[in-house]
Image 1 (cartoon, helix red, strand yellow):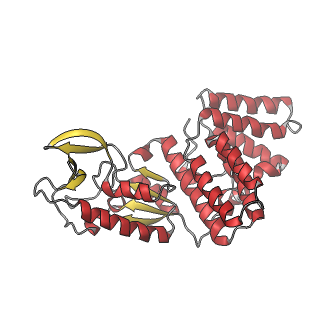
Image 2 (cartoon, rainbow, N blue to C red):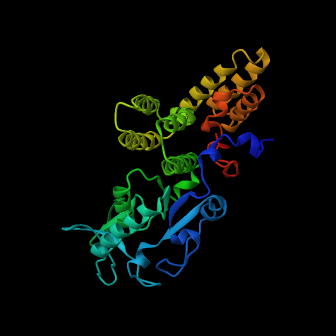
Image 3 (spheres, one colour):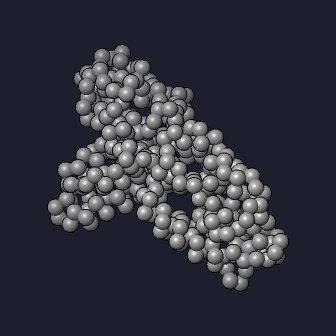
Length: 332
């Protein structure tokens, strides 16, 4: 059984209680009764599973822009002026008010240091994507974005964002939370005061994790770290942070995970006997074939890392990237 002591060199080492995971969220997902019908859309994964690890920043742009509870529903409408946020019952147009509110609110959120954002699916204000756009009362297409959500994504391009519905998909859920935790680790590293040496440590700890996302991005980050001293430090840190999040936006694949697992196994070449190697190889191959979840070969590798004190692997966040209570790697 893994204990706090055996996993302390993973994600916890790079986090800080004074800089908690801070995630913006559509207020109705927390159970706040702010929807147009006076109800809520409480999401149990958001509140009960992820909630204990997160400081939520609830936002309801419709209420904060001045709409009452309850209120007539609104929708995105195509017009000669572009897409507008309109109440079809009254004809009232909230576009300019929502745009002004959104820009002001986003500046406030930037000061808070968000690590991610969870939007309400299907909302004409908060929906990330696939929002119906109407013309003359008839659906025209479903390629719209919620007005507030679209502005936020345009203004905070590096911020990890997801919708609560998509978080029911295990790989999307894992990728989002992994990006949120990485965002927080980088924010904590900057807050503590980066040096070139600390940047090297940060990069070293994330090497295997980055390789599951994008091998090319991993190499670009390595080149950037190697350029320390040839460009101003602040420029180096800014460029690293941007490339770090860009690399993480690419979702991991089974193939890249398999490559990383096989690379890690190379560190045991002279440490395991033939039967132990065969057991480890079999678990990696079974994972590649979709027969077992990722957690199985990872558990075998972690056991041998601790048993043989393989320092390089023990320092890799890849083997302990997020709270085990979230069980994010228990799916195939």
